[in-house]
Length: 263
Image (cartoon, rainbow, N blue to C red; front, side):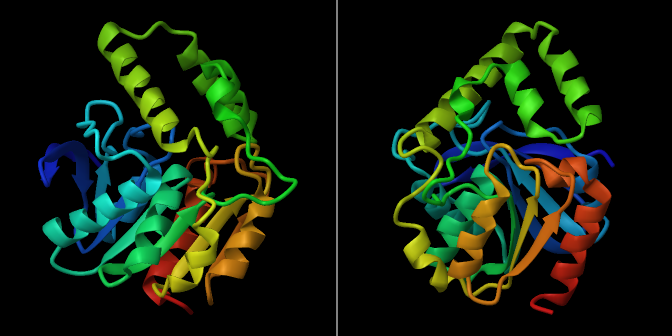
C-alpha cells in the first residue's frame, strides 16, 4: 500500500504526515529514532483503519517551534491535533517516545481518545533498572540493540555503513537533536507521569518485547500498577520494536484489542 504524504498544520505548526486506509481514525506516534518508513505493520492496520503517521514537531522536516520543549508539551500538542483535525475519537498507537507522548496526552484528557496502544513505552523510571543510554550510541550500536533477531539487525547495520546524502544527513541530525531536546534530562522519563496514570480512562493495551534492551520489559509492571484495567501482551524473543520484529503477531494482537476494547 502506498500512503499519501502531506503537511498537517496545527496552530501554525506544520509537520509531515503519511496517510493510508479507511475506517475509524488511528494515529501512530513514532519513537525517538524519528519518522519511520511506511512499514508492513502500518499496511496491516490500514486494512481496517484510516492510519495517520505524523512526524513529531522538531523531528526531521517538521517545524520545530521553540515553545514545544518537553514530552508533556508534545502530549498537549497532540490533544490539539485531535481537536482540530478529527471529528470522532481516535485510536492512538505509540512506540517508545511516542508511547510516552500518548500517555502524557491521555492523563490530561481522554475525551477524544478511543483507545491507547503503547508499544514498549518510555516515560517511567523503575528504581534499579535503567533504560539504555541511546544518546551515546553510534548508528551501528543502535542497530545492534534495537532488535533481538539478527535477521533484523543486519539490514540496519548495512544501511548505517552507506553514506547518506546531505539532505538525509540533515534530517537525521535534526531528529537526533529533537530526541535530545525531549528526552535527555531527565533521561527518557517524566518523574510526574506515574502518579497520574490512574487518570487514563481509555481502553489501554501495553505491548512489550521480552528481550527489549532499550526500555527493559521489567518496566511493564510499573505501567500495570498505574493504569486501571490495562491489557498487557508480552512478546517472546523480541526486542524494542515489536511492531517491526514480530509484525504479524503484534498486528493481530493490536487489531483484536481495537476491535474488542477492554475484552
